[in-house]
Amino acid sequence: MILAGGSGFLGQALAKHFQALGWKVVVLTRSPEANRAAREVRWDAGTLGVWARELEGAAAVVNLTGRSVDCRYNAENRRLIMDSRVNSTRVIGQAIAQCGQPPVWLNASSATIYRHTVGPAWDESGTDFAATPEVQDEFSLEVIHAWERALSEAVTPRTRKVALRTTMVLGLARNSVFPVLRRLARLGLGGRMGSGEQFVSWLHATDFLRAVEFLIAHEDMSGPVNLAAPNPVPNHELMRTFRELVRMPVGLPATRWMLEVGAFFLRTETELILKSRRVVPGRLRKAGFEFRVPELRAALAELQGRAGGS
Image 1: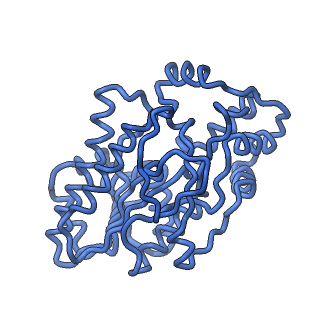
Image 2: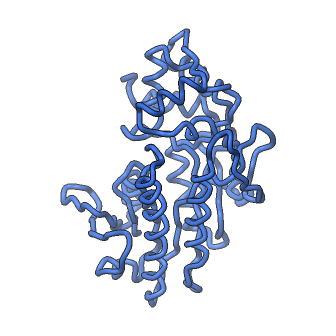
């Protein structure tokens, strides 16, 4: 297996998961480190190089490359966010096109592509991708459309391609959202954010890993696939569950203006909190995928148990 941009939270988790299954894993990264478990190969995520030889005969390539969106959307960050996703996708397509035995190609995308809604949930049949000015998601949608277009336009006729429309993945890594929200709840800041009515779609890391394995194995699965647990929850329920997890009886709510001020000082954007992402895994469920952790309360309790209450 080839993991492009595989040095982050999800990439490292995938490397360990597939190595445990007996797979050979190669990570494409800008900064190889010899002490990591998987073999690492340098690439610049934009131009062909000797790294492209690694794709020949590989079972699968999973491209997770992308500048973090947890930043202020100034001109430079917008360019980095867009280019890192589109350019890496294009060059992987070029590398696959050169392969005599090409791999299956799973490319990261985002469930943020669906329109902001507190109504019925979106599955992959949804085609309403309109922006919602009140949550300022215009740029995010522009990026995701360009990202998925780069995947679909890649000329790789012998390669099955899957766009991983991923939701918020809950894990224990420092840069995942679970420890951040748990810390807020412990500090008494775990109240609703904004109205609290916006939906949060999520996925336990275990089911993320199993879903990727499932998609590689099922040759009938191509195109966009929602990687989400079947039960999204409103923000107020998410935060209440975190408060209960850490036994904090109170949680200071954050109004929109408070979120705007906080986002400015934390160098991030309120869209990440205020957009209602009510997304369900239509295609995975139809294909027979069984979630091990389909309910939020059980997901948080399992992570808390492994964290040892720390």
